[in-house]
Image (cartoon, rainbow, N blue to C red):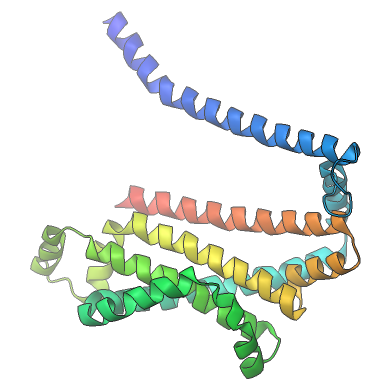
Length: 265
């Protein structure tokens, strides 16, 4: 019995040790990469105007945290990304539900939608800028469209892959419309659904930062554009680090939501 118990305990501990080793390996890789980059820049192999030393970027980032300039830009970008992501989720849920419900429409539009989010749709910004002007409304509108398309496509694919037995079970329980979606469709399609959410987040964030950079209309994109124009490479990479932190934070929040939904159902 003692031998069996020790084997089971070792079996349970193995995945934890494996995850710790994986995280340690990732940490060593990241630290090693930045150390090598630091040495290459300091030795003059890489130009300081193009690549800033990671130590100086970290120092600049710490200094920026106490400036109004950074926080004003961050709040603008955070608001635009947040609104665009919420709108993308709403439009994507409605669009995915319609694509799933109407098979003829899905067969006709799905290849077009897949091609749309595979292409650099941000190049359409002159059209939207002409219609709406270089402002937050234009940025949020384009980011919503770019984020909603992958969510709709993934949602329709996820709903289409649900076991028909689950659908029959839902209908036998007299579940229709929103109740069927909330009780059967969304829980069964959660993995594909959240994959679409992450893709939508990525496209929405790229759209917001890219359009802020191109239109010079505010936010972190405008801050990066301004610092780039005055050859402030340390400031550019510090602002990019803030964008990366924002993306990781939202992605982490989506991961927590996904785990809670999976555990609930």
